[in-house]
Image (cartoon, rainbow, N blue to C red; front, side, top):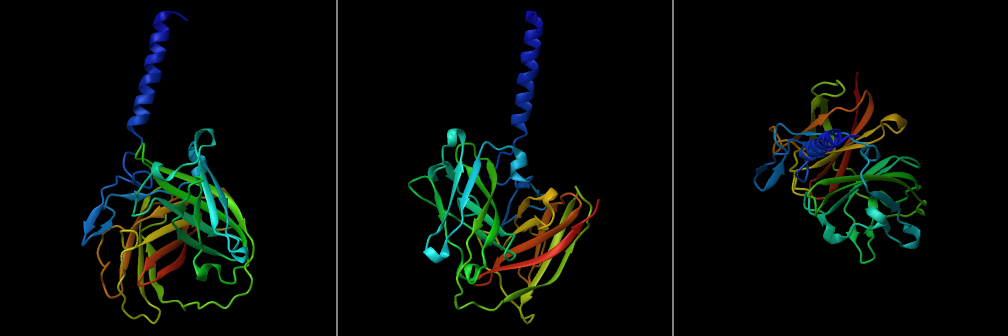
Amino acid sequence: MNASKQVGMITVIALAIFIALRNLPDTHCALLHSDHQPVMQNGVEFCGVNEEANFYRPKALNYPFELKVEMPDVNAGKPGKLWVLGAHQHPVLDHEVAISHTQKLHLHLRQITGREGYVHLHPQPQEDGSWTFVLPQEFQANNPGGNFLAYVDFVSALSNRSVLAEAEAAMPGVGVTTPLVSPPRLKIIESSLSHQRAGEVALCRVKLSGINEESLKLKPLMGTLGHAVVFSRLTDEAHRGYAHLHPSLEGGEYDAQPTLWFRLRLPPAGDYQFWVHVNDGTDQYLKFDFTVKP
């Protein structure tokens, strides 16, 4: 290869790298949410009206990070542990993670066998490079154990960019206990999507009330009025993945029966679950199913 061809090839490669770097997300939530322009109201953060959350399978993004998870052994009194491993199996440490939505590490645990369930946790860093977590009492009570899908998202303090990772783990069953389990306090009274077309942005509407349709007041949860995740149905291996959403300021959030709105670029056609995580004094998880059409 002559010198001019070498110069031309190097120029093309350099230009491609420059364009790729320019298009990388450059804010804490810009990967999870396109066009991240948060709106603050009364000290609570909402997504901007042009933002949209995206559905991902982290492994398909080829991040240079590996997630390893050990589920808690409740019977032995052992907490859960996880490691996020980077280059040369170097564990991601506390000082290498920035704060996003008031926390450093967001762990989404989805139980897929034994029983169905979901919980959003924030593991705490340890000196050995691991991060530990404890399941809420109501989630672990009489849990038959089973297989879990684990997803983490966090922001690298060095690059200021979001990182996603996923893993599978199993938890032993919990012995029969009689904890003080609170009855459900809230329910979804209306849920809808503005449309169901795969690949397009939909406005997802969730209206909440007390269990007897009485009024309620949502409290800030990780700096916003709620969080949500979308998973594919348990039987849909082809579309396994998740989306992590935060409310968009659309109106009705402070009504007696509040409405939360989420903007989501719809995943491929199939059946999905929408889990809403809110706080009215205690953490509450509510779910509805929806279908995406081609």
